[in-house]
Every structure is written in C-alpha cells, then in structure tokens.
Image (tube, rainbow over all chains, first blue to last red; front, side, top):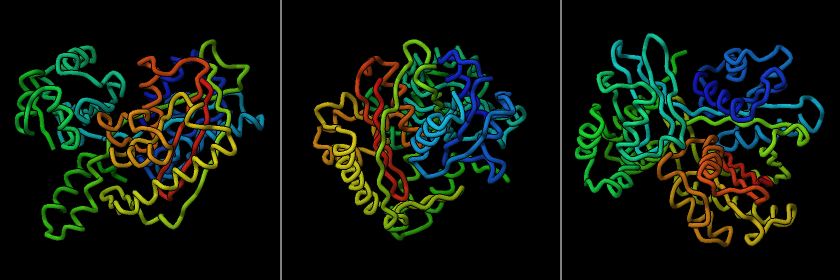
Length: 192
Length: 191
C-alpha cells in the first residue's frame, strides 16, 4: 500500500492534476497486502481521495496494468469520470524481524527500493529510473534519501543480475560483489 | 494475514531447491529469482483535459487469450513454479496478437517507433522480437536491471524510456503486455 501510494503521489505531482478530480482509482498488482480489503481502497484512503472516487482492483497476472489502463479508459469514454489513476506495486516488504536495522532491498543496479523499519513500516525510497546507478551514484542517492552507513543497510542483490554488475565493475563472483558494495558504500551487502 | 516478503520467498525457494536432487523440481522454481520490486502509476483522462505536453493518447488495443497455457505459472505467497517450456509456447501468443494488431490497428514494424514489451528474460525477448520480425535490440529492455516486476514492468520501462528521452511527441508506441493465462494485449499509444 505504501509503495502504491508513493507511485500515485509521483504521478499526481508530475501531472499537476488536482487529486479531488480523480474519479476512479484502479489497483492492478499481482502483489497484494491482503485478500481483502481491496488495495485500491487502501491507497484511496492514503491519498485522501474524494468519496465520489470509485476504488477497484483488477487482477489478471502480468497483464493487469494494461488491463487497468483499458478498463479506466472505457470508464472515461463512458462518462463515469474525467480522471482515473491506475497503479501497481510489486514490492518486497522487508524489515519485519529486526528492531534496529534499516534495510535497502534492490535488484542489483536497478529496480525500486524499499526502506523498512519494523516500527514505522516499510517506506519506498526510490524509483526504478533513478536507481539504475553505479556505486558512487548509488552512494549519492542513498545520502539524498538520508540513509547512512550506520543504519546498517543491507543491499541484497539478485544472482541473476550479477553478470551485469560484474561487467560494469570488473569483479568476478558474488563474494567479491558483496565486498565491493561494502567497500564502496560502507554498507553490509548480501548477494543471493 | 501476514505478508511474506519477497526476500523470504527467495530464501524459502532456495531452501526447497537445495533440499532436492530432482532437477525438474529445482528448475521449476528457478524463475522465482527473476522477480524484482517496483511500483508504477499512470493517470488517464479525457484528451481535452490533459495537461500541456502530456497528451499521450491511448488509441486502441487488441488482445488474445490462450487458456490452454493456464498451468504455465502458479504463484502463491510462499512459492512460485513455472513450466519454462510452456512459457516459450505462451510467447507465441504474442505473435498471434501482433497479427491482429496489424490487421485491426494498422500497425507494422515499419510504422511503430517504439516497442515496449513486458519484461521477462532474454529468451522471451529474443522469441518476441522474432515474432514481430524485428531485432531484439529494437525492443525496449529493462529486465537486465529491474528484473521481472510483473505488471509494473511495462509502465516502468515506458517511464525509463521517457526519462532518457527515447520517446518523443508524435511517436507511435506499441505496448505488448502478456501474463499468465496466457493473456496478451497489444495497445497503441500516440505519444
């Protein structure tokens, strides 16, 4: 819910549209925090959308974001609303089991990041585009997000993406990758 | 209900894979590690209400449903299994949907400026490109660094293309979405 809310806020901000004019919010993820209530209802609440705004979820595996676009487009065509929001969040929720650590979870060299604190919930801290970065860029981005090395951030990397990392950084295995992340960023790193 | 984190899904999957000598069981869970995290949102509105410079128009879509491939991928919170042979078979549905898109939407590989497909893997990209009759390099690829972010993949890929200046006003964008079912949708956006 938090990641979906974050994405919605970014879209609303980029468009300059008054959120009170949004007539439909449609959540389209495979991932859902609950079986019920619907995810769209929860994001509706977080964004304080008007009571007139319809909240609905569209679930259909990996096509559901485009299904969502077409569903709300039909509603706009049919005069149900003027503006509609379509959102999907496929997000790792981390940080449940540790009271002190702050986790940064990312697919190496990319993907969205989630920052989790067990007491305050999981907060998404970056978007996909800004997260495609080299080590120093990543360090700068982490500073911008006010995540410090002493927050004991864990960088978790997909083995699948290791080759890309290796190609860019001239390192040859997972252990070296985690050492490299640690030495570059000062963070504990786990490669899975 | 307690949400099982993706990290826990990975760990549980690794434990299952390490505790078997059955290669098929091992292989069927491999695709779990292609999953990535991400979020995307889009606002749609009537064309006359669109903010200046953001009047990208969703002008049409066609779809195909191939339910005989419905066993291809089964996901629960704690486990995902994939029949990789069926995935490749399912990608062929993309070719069938593309044929309909050419007929119904007047699309061709020559008049589409940007192809943005669902992001799965190099193999899916290569086969998909072959179906479209284009080089894999002509397809937008974000899976090498985002992984497969499920339905958000296509929106994230489109967002990255826009931020990096590779999609320009007036261009014809072809969204190619496919997912378990298999359902495939080819949608046209005039940027």
